[in-house]
Amino acid sequence: MDSRIFWNIMVATDGSELARKAVDSAVKIARLNNAKLYAVNVIAPGEISVTQHDPRDIEWKKQMKEHLEAQGREATAYAETAGKIENVAVEPVILEGNPADQIVNFAEKNDIDLIVMGTLGKTGIQRFLLGSVTENVVRHSKKPVLVIR
Image (tube, rainbow, N blue to C red; front, side):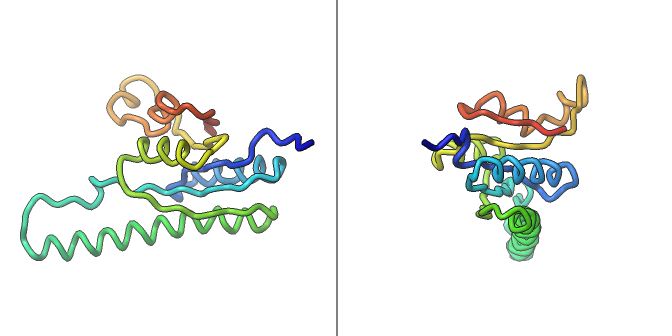
């Protein structure tokens, strides 16, 4: 009988130091459960949108998207490297859209047992003004979410 609690784990990463802490925790949990780990990076549409129809804007948007995709590959590559060290299979995934929605949808569609995310721990007016992808995922996910501070 298999005693694993988690079979498929997802870690959301943007490559920041905080996200790397979440990745490190997710890799350890995946190793202990012999689980597959998905390292997910989401490119938000606002990061690459333009309002004008100038041909230069189209080129800028293309270059910005390529830059953000490269950052996403770098962020997920950290998870792949950490996984190799711990003998954990890591699948990198880059998505586009609203980060919280994309994370929740990916978890639902891919039978994820646990979502691991970092948070800055902002409170009060800072949290209200900044919003929080992690908070939105916790609020809307049907899957368990582990928040790493």
